[in-house]
Amino acid sequence: MKIHITNARVIDPASGTDVVQDVFIAAGKILAMGQAPHDFSANKVIDATGLVLAPGLVDLSARLREPGFEYKATLESELQAAMRGGVTSLVCPPDTDPVLDEAGLVEMLKQRARLQNKAHVYPLGALTLGLKGQALTEMAALTEAGCVGFSQAEEPIEDTNVLQRALQYASTFGYTVWLRPQDAFIGKGGVAHSGPLATRLGLSGVPVMSETIALHTLFELMRSTGARVHLCRISSAAGLELVRQAKQEGLLLSCDVGVHHVHLTDADIGYFDSNARMTPPLRSQRDRDAIQAALRDGTIDAICSDHTPVDDDEKLLPFAEASPGATGLELLLSLALKWAEDSRDTVSLSQVLMKITHAPAQLANLPCGQIAVGQIADLCLFDATQRWTVAASALVSQGKHTPFLAYELPGVVKATIVAGHLAFDALK
Image (cartoon, rainbow, N blue to C red; front, top):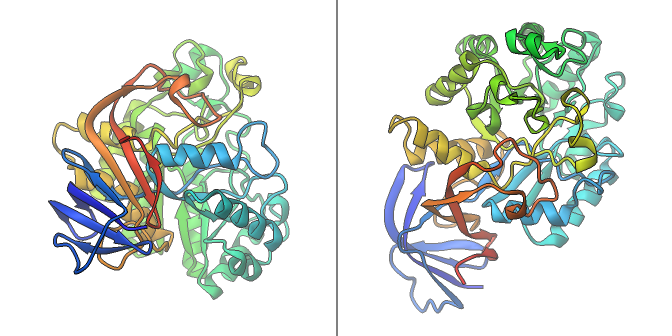
């Protein structure tokens, strides 16, 4: 299909481009920008006057719930949600049922995703068999099957000998290990940030040192093994300071933050709102402010949706009994734009888009995240000024629970193009 996008404000964070121009797409790639190629005849012309054309969003954590949890969500529903959110590439954790610890399971997931003809799906393989933290998986076979890294999802490895062997193995073959820093015992069973609010509400706490102790241990193991590690969902000011120091030291390190933690604090739990039950928990205002500062100075490389659809049976329960997680694929762009809006012009649109396009693509080593001639045409066309109100009925995802219900947010996706295919079109 040949597509001609006219009068778009093209923003490409990778090259610093921010200019109104036409874009020409053919054979799944960007054929030209600015002037039309010779003899180019479009099948589809999109008038993008007043709209922003950005690289398709790259989400570093989106649970699609297949295989095993289809009652919570399906590939079809969540990839459609990705299209509505402008997300063209996403990384999914291995905590499905069965766990993604065998090559055949990974190949099956990728094949099913390809048949949807929507977003590119990049699975993370399990670091240990069954995520049990005991025996290592066949990382080479999982990589060959299509895994872009290896993770324990929300299951910390108790035995540091096992973690050391995993990092040694990964380092030998150049694999990246994706870990959420959490101590296996401190804060285990906790449901909220340890602090005055959790005490007042009578909720069991997860202290910040659960994160910092895990980081200290991990950095020592990284020094001895030379492994490359991506830290998932960093949540505290103290943790970010350790990350900042480790990066200055030269450790092979990157990190992301969940988009909910960019905006919310433990105070947003309110009167036991289970929609605000997250993993890691929403922390203090000081931690939230540190996250925003770390995004500005580059300590945090990327923002992810941490998309975790949860059904009513597991969410409409007392706070401590509810399953953690919230829908995020359709909110990632809008919440990132809200961060820029709230920053009072200290963060540019290009800087925001960098955190959800080129930067995550680079750290996951994915062939996307930029707009340039010859690149795969993964694009997101959106109206940065139009606002919408978050409502369960407005969400395509099977997961309808989010702490942002009734919020008015900026940014509405008008079209999503995946490999030159117009996968979502709201311009009709």
